[in-house]
Length: 310
Length: 310
Ligand SMILES: Nc1ncnc2c1ncn2[C@@H]1O[C@H](COP(=O)(O)OP(=O)(O)O)[C@@H](O)[C@H]1O
Ligand SMILES: [Mg+2]
Image (cartoon, rainbow over all chains, first blue to last red; front, side, top):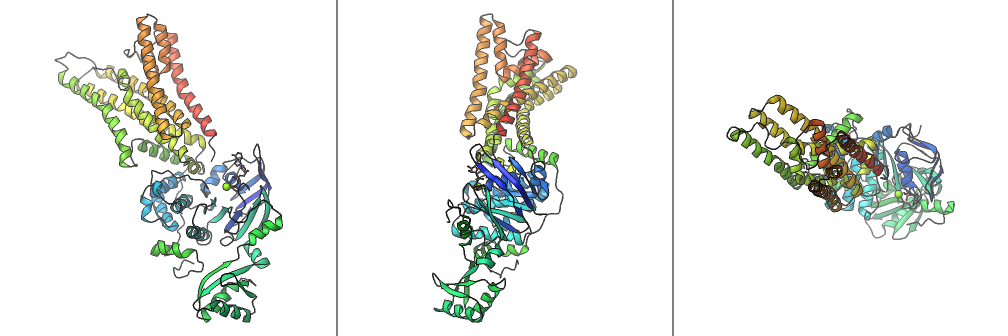
């Protein structure tokens, strides 16, 4: 039984078909839901919460039917909307406590959970100040905290990186991954930025015009076409040294733009091999990330001409 | 996983530095009780009621409602003082101002209270779109609407009823006949509840349709004050022209004159308007109009919130 299962799910608005016979299964861990603006990501999330009725087809969340059991689902699920939803005149702390109570926590428990969760999302002293004065990054964290306060089984995060600068975006993505891996909460996270989510997701679902373009584990991506981009420092010729060592270890490696090394992923031990070799050579590993063009490739293969890789 | 020294991906560096030591406490799941729909709605109700008087909000939010409550109580306090001290000298055997007249005398204060607090309770969630966070929780949409309305109604009832209670206690202290006094007081309290329901219903409806705060305040003030001024002017003219029925019909169009007329008809309260309902048919019309005002504003609110998208 998947965390989320949809079958022939269709949402017809007067002018557009937002979702078109969608069949997807989402399991535990982090699932990225990717698609250009208007692809139907937010519509899918609202249907899953039982807030918007589907035109046809069916969906279950944690075993409950979205059409009949919305209340039960919303008790078990946390939702971070893509749009602004925070009142300017209360503090994040007060808001998250209140929202915890609205999810059924007794007051004392809500206070304790709010304090824990605000700490996890990285809102420190500022949690006691009115939200109106927050930066976008802080607001996104507060939105995330209210989605987590009742210890949900699943969180639906709609464009959590929207409007963030690159470093806050990385923080947010790291948080998303921790929620899935350390907190043990299943995550469905959306983005219109192609290639952003594959780093933190176990599984990626690609939507285009309300239709499922592709659904696959990110490890599939890695095995099929995957490569890692590596940046090392410590010596002027650090990249060439490591590249040679990787080739000697039997891996396929080549120089990439900006003194980076691109190494093809052979299996799940490849990152460890890279790390060990870097240490052996006395170099510092600045960065190791999966190459980011793969989801864009998916779009190209799928022939989704309208999609603009960002 | 949560060891702070392990920084396998570049994104977490900043986040971990910021959350510091606290990070390695790890995520604690919640295993405690979860409350059902009733207790959640009750907690939502009391929070809303408290917020209406600025409790649990900023110091600034307390100023206006507390001043208004003070101004409402002040005349009652003076009346009670006079009654207790000078009952024999002035040869008084009943309240100096009738219970049912008091809300008309203080209608400006009541209207300002409702006009300032309805937007705070109703428009605010719509303007900031905080309503999404409520809708994404188990509480049903209709319960949200009814509870918000209940908070505003009870807050208004407290404002109208508090001075009446003070006068009642003063009356007992001054040895007014307790049986008669209790009967009159209970009638007045029913009237206060109905007036609060009418005022809160109309103000909530206007506030839900006028999302911008300043506009909502103005709109409620205009609706309540203008209707009262126009109605009492017409009633004055009608008496002069000996066309009482015109005045009685006009009385249906302001909550203050409407509920006062109802009290005259049902509880035999002393007249506080120039043209209270004089026939049984007119009296029944007043009762029906009062119920229609309350039920109509609830219905209007339900329709309005059905259109609110999550
Ligand atoms: N309430 C609505 N009424 C009419 N059309 C809508 C509504 N909500 C979304 N749509 C349309 O449905 C499509 C999918 O929208 P959405 O789910 O918001 O996409 P995404 O979140 O992927 O950007 C878009 O074409 C959008 O204009
Ligand atoms: Mg969207």
